[in-house]
Amino acid sequence: MFELTGKVAIVTGAAGGLGQGIAVAFATQGAIVVPTDRPGVSMDETAGACEKAGAPRVFPVSMDVTDSEGIKTAIASVEAELGRIDILASNAGLNKPMPAQDVTPEIWDEHFAVNIKGGFFAAQAVAPIMKRQHFGRVIFTGSQAGIVARENQQPYCATKGGIQSLVRALAYDWAKDGITVNAVAPTFAMTQLARKRLEDPEYAKMVLGMIPVGRLVEPLEIGAAFTYLASNEAAMVTGQTLVIDGGWTIW
Image 1 (cartoon, rainbow, N blue to C red):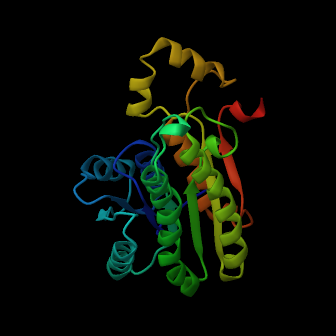
Image 2: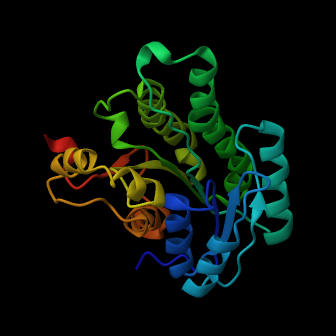
């Protein structure tokens, strides 16, 4: 169940954190994994973890999602090398918390360039390939911040809320082409950054107090949700946001 054997899966923002968890989850299910991240960022750790997890092949590619032409070049290189693209996990993201009055137009635009624009143009680039195959899975990393407020994170919340609308719009347009489009919206994940922030006991108490199950989500648990949405079993699931938050948003 949820087997991805032979499927070619691109993961953006895959050098660490959630992206690495998604890439490894795909590898565990037999996918050929294409981890991508910004030029100059090492993907050796992710590539090694994917190989260890059983990926039949790992093909790292440099791709900056804020560079629309670079996205096209990277996607073309994947198709030329591997012959097809079945899955896009659009995970690359940016979050710079600060009070609303400190947000500049440049900071606002930076969030939208990575979280919305980059994701859209990556999806746009893989769509013609998926349409020719009459099969494709496009999955965005959303956030519970697109559903409930997070303090001092207005640009981030706006972009993550926008992802839910973008997913519905793309899902509607591409359904006839055999392409599903969905999002996974995590709560705080147990990444290196989160571990560092949780060293503050007051912050840790606040975060864990908002999650009824009492812990953070693991990157591989987010990867499992991506794996489900990428699988044949999820063929009738499109335009949806799957919330993985341990109950935060049910309050």
